[in-house]
Amino acid sequence: MKDGHRILRKYFCELIKACFDGRKPSNIPEGITENDLMKYACIGQIQYPILSSLLKTEISDQFKSKLVPIVKESTITTFLQVMTSKKISNELEKNGIRHQMLKGAVIKDYYPSPEMRQMSDIDLIVYEDSLDKTIEIVENMGFTNHGLIKHHVVFTNDADLCIEVHWCLIDDNVDLGQYLYFKDNFRAKLKDGTGYTYEFGIEDFYVYMIAHMAKHFFETGCGIRNLLDIYVYLKKFGEKMDSDYLKRELTNCGIFVFEKHMRKMAFIWLEDQECPGFYENLFSYMLDCGIYGKGENGIWSQLAKETNAENKNLKMHYYFPSYLFMREKYKWVDKRKYLLPLAWMIRFISALNSKEAIRHKEKFEHSSNDDMSEILEIYHTLGLNYRR
Image (tube, rainbow, N blue to C red):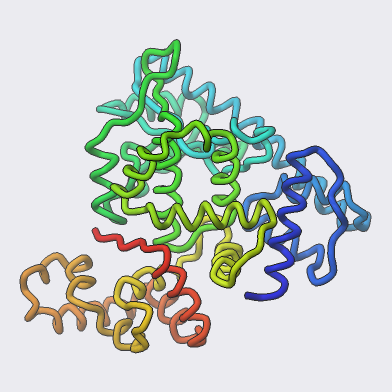
């Protein structure tokens, strides 16, 4: 792990805890720069807790002039998101549409103050055949419909707010087991005093939060704000949750091991505990992932599924994936192993015109053996063996 990342981990902890406690943090330590702090706070979408704390330290007027508008914009955006979330939910309730607010729109309320938890968009899910009516309601609120993207409809407005209306909780293109887990088991319950507004119990919200994080981590990596969410949620609800139920449901989702390590990473970071080498590497990887990961990181989860900790022949696995991998990509290979060479050829030809495949190839060819070993150790240890 880079020394700068280690210093950032410890100082980010100091800045976040100072923000939560409403106190003045220590000044910027040697080994990191003002630009480092602003860069990683912004790409990780933790601008408010980091930058608002920095404003209380002894920084230059020039740096302060850069931070103030970012903190102000973050605060205003949070206010608009909170008000919009409430308005959407009220409109759906009034129109008899069964719905549920998701992710950041919920967990904001568990932070010391909502602006401390930033979010890119307002996520909600509608149940049954209510999508067309929901689209009409959101459009009538002044939002522009950008159409279907994967398993949600995306809307934006002139204030740069984004709304994602989902009709399923987990995409079936990531892991069939998790898709069926959330599809076949309706776990939400009505909020008190409502007839159509649903919410998860504290255990089920946590399971979904971890499943959503794991999905992003598996696909392209994910950022350290997810660790902050885990820490905040467990500090609030950890002692109230049914640990046996939680273990069973996390196991059923295939994310029990993943959650165990991410929980440990969150507390190592935010309680400034001793950090073993594996977790130093994990934090460093997540720090560089931004918030939603990087497209080229998609290579690591697939290589991890194809290899084990002792396997060194990465090139063979990358260029000639296994039958299990290829039958996920090409359904017609299933039960026809003799077609594997044809599938490899089609994959190779298709990759020549795929920007994503080109990025994967560049990432693979420009990564050192040590870097690849470190990242694959992370994926092997976290145990996300997803299958479509």
